[in-house]
Structure formats: structure tokens, C-alpha cells
Image (cartoon, rainbow, N blue to C red; front, side, top):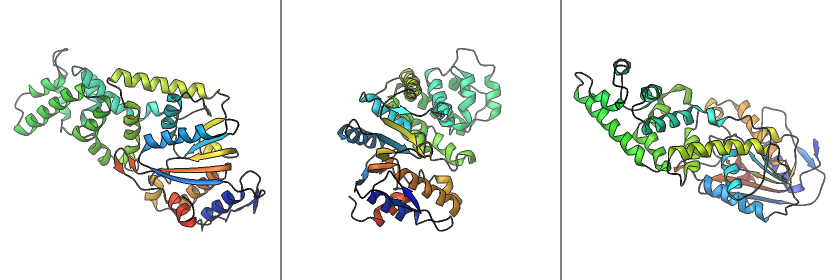
Length: 344
């Protein structure tokens, strides 16, 4: 049995109950070294926006001399937190951030689709996206488009191709009209149009490389960052600013840290917030789909690590919706709720 010199009696007691769910790996439990009791609170809120807002409200209530750790399973969660802290002029520290959301394939696809909507004469951009849209465009058609006039709309050129049957005429007409509407939409509405009306969501569902990816998390974040923006240029500027913010935060002296759980191993905070406790995200979808008990137990051990970073208070958050679709709480959140029925 290990001695825990940081966490209080009830945090250790509840953490031990969680880790006892592991049956394959050796049993791990800790013994507290302080009798002081602490707060453990569970929250279920509607969505990521409210989660981030509630997080900021809770942080503002904490003694500024106390340390705070905001922990998450997936690096992408850092962007919700960083954006909300920035908007409320709250300084924070983040360990050197090796996560590069800006090279994410889904984000780049969205950027290319939006870029094409701004200039539908750009054949090179269209070549990167045409097979990801629900338009049944053959590679032969793209080859013929190489000879179109430079300043002619790609979609009009598709409609001018010789001897198109009614099926293709209808598909290409619909695609042309969708891109015209896309250009006029507000940014957050553009994201739903790309996902559902242009058929990009179907592409993600059918493409094997994305089979274990919860792409609703990516689109939820993109819409979160797009809120109140009007143009594609504003969206790109916001991404660039957020990237710079995270880079600068690595040199901050703030007592508020945001971190993956992995990076928080060995650290301790007076107050710990564990966010995004969502089924398919923690544990990750690929682990749940593998039915590998060892991998699942490793995730539970990671959750145990997160809980035992707290010295005084532990706050755990889950949400009800991701990308306006219902999601379930993490199995760890439910285990904690079931094992400790007195928690709020």
C-alpha cells in the first residue's frame, strides 16, 4: 500500500474504490496521511460552452493563493479551456504543448472546403476535397476540368461537361447551390452545412481511418471557436491567436495550470478540475471498441492518477451534448456516482 502525502482522507477513500474496479493488473491503493476532509463535487452540464463557463466561475471563487489544475484526457480539451480563460482575462500555465490541432486532418478539410467556397474557381483546392463530398464526382471529370478557363467556376465547368446524365446534372447543380449558400452563412452555420448537407459527415463515417475517431468532438470545438464569427478570415485569425496564446502560456508563472492527465503525473494541486468525462472520450472510443480489458484498466488507472492530484478539492465534469448530439457520461463518472451516492 502506498502512502499519499497530498490528498485528503475522502479523496483517497473514493479513489481507492475506483481503482478496485481493476481485476487484471495488480491492485493499487493508497493510504492517506491527513485526516482533513475535502470537497468532491460532480457536475453534469449541457455542453462544452457551459462547462468552460462554469469552470471559470468556480476558479474565480477559489483563494488566489491556492493552486489549480485543470486536467483532461485529450489535448483537444485544452482549447475550450484556454479560449474561455483568455476571454475572462485569466492567466494560466500550460506545459510545453506538443499537441498540434492545427494539422488535424478534419480541421484542414474544413478549412479547404471553406476556402473553396470563397473562391470556386480554384481547381487545386477542389482537388483536395471533391471526393469527400456527397457528389459522386469521378476522377475522369476532374481530369477534364484541367482545361477549363482559369477564372471560370469549377462547379459551372462540371455542369458544362459533355453528355452528363440527369443523375450527375442534379448532383452537380445541388453542389453548386450548396456552395453558394455556404459562402453567405455565418461561420457556426457553415460547419453544420459541411457536415450534413455537403456530405462530409458521411465520408468520415465510411472512411476506415476515422472509424475510431469521435469526429463530433472536432466539430464541436470548431463551432465553439466559430461562435459570433462572420468570415473565414476571422476564423483563421482566431486559430492563429489561440496557437500563440498556448505557446506563450508555457512561460507563465500563473498558479492555474491546464494539462493532460499524463503530463500531470507526479504533480499536485490544491484544487483539481477533471473535465470532459464523456463516454468514448475517456476512456477513448478505440479502447472501448477493442474490448481489451487491459487497456480499459490502464484508462481507469489514469483516472485514479487524475483524482489523486488533488489536495483539498476535486471537481469532476461531464456534459450532455457534443456537437448538439446527446452523449453519455464516462463509465468512470458513473462508477464514481454509483460508489458514492452521497455526492451531489
